[in-house]
Length: 338
Ligand code: ASP
Image (cartoon, rainbow, N blue to C red):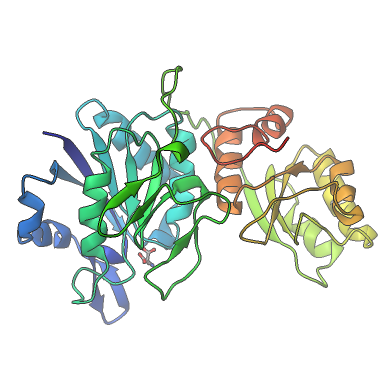
């Protein structure tokens, strides 16, 4: 019989209403699962629940939380066939991306899930998410970090939260769903990570790099951008327009990027569009960034680019080595274009 570890880290799924809005409640999931007859049926894997205190609204998650989740998985990886991580939806795409880099080469399913409505609500979407995630976490062909939500299994580092109302809260604009879930669970095997020849490894985070995300907008001033990229910033995800275009007619904006790059800041170009790819050579307005040494984020989500940048810098790589690694595929987060 398969064994799955449920790591409970927080999120709406296990929240209750309070005078200050939804807040996590310790013991809620334990009590709920104890009363839920389906989860002890023989066609579900056996499971254990591990709570990582303090439970958090995922808006309060930070890289130290990514690390404690990665360590909790690493410590139990031999004992279980797979993992379900109960997590808030707001920053789930960041955590899923970060885990894919921290646990590069993981050979077991790591399924993040949560809910738009708490389990305490009669219309909660959490119940089905929990049950289907348990089944997915027992699926030996999944060897990667995924998000299960709204009847779709998505690659974690390709996902973005796109809706805070619909039960279909996540999308993966540049990679098809790994499974469609209806009356049956249809895994799309050709899209999954193939078995690896190299052993899985956990990335060590040796330090806390200073990284920023900067979203361009028409009218942004050169001084404003310069301030955002000032020391001690070491890495920046620049969220540009369309295919990676930048207001290149504005000398002050270009100078702000140039001085950051020359100071050793790794600047990565990601598009504000949810699908498509950055092609810095396509327009003169994007080419200007390529000439300054800005790294193209290709088809990475800003969430994947940000967490990848963070993990690479935190692992002690130099700016030059980080720039190179940013364009390479580590965990299925970026496509290669010929
Ligand atoms: N604010 C919540 C969280 O991210 C939202 C959710 O879980 O849906 O923890």
